[in-house]
Length: 99
Image 1 (cartoon, rainbow, N blue to C red):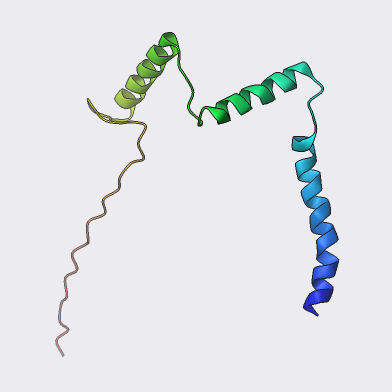
Image 2 (cartoon, one colour):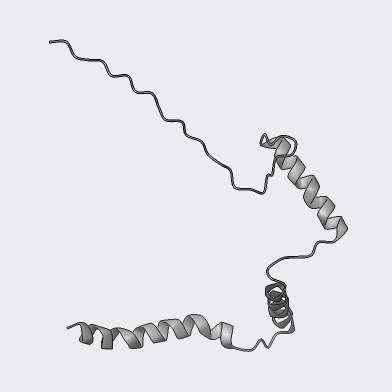
């Protein structure tokens, strides 16, 4: 029973996966598309880190300061870090029931 399902599902899975992967395997014919792919590959080869020009670094710093001021980040707060949540344990009072 399992083998019948497997035999029926394999061609469908192969067809779906080929349909998804086909554009990525095809060579780009458009020069803009080729430039885009080259930049993505270059970014991947750099380890996923972008190099910022001094102007862009200054703009990034200004935007982070603006966001910090708007959303309550104080001086020295890292607004790029994921927030840490602290949920204190609630105090539960137990009242005995008098019969």
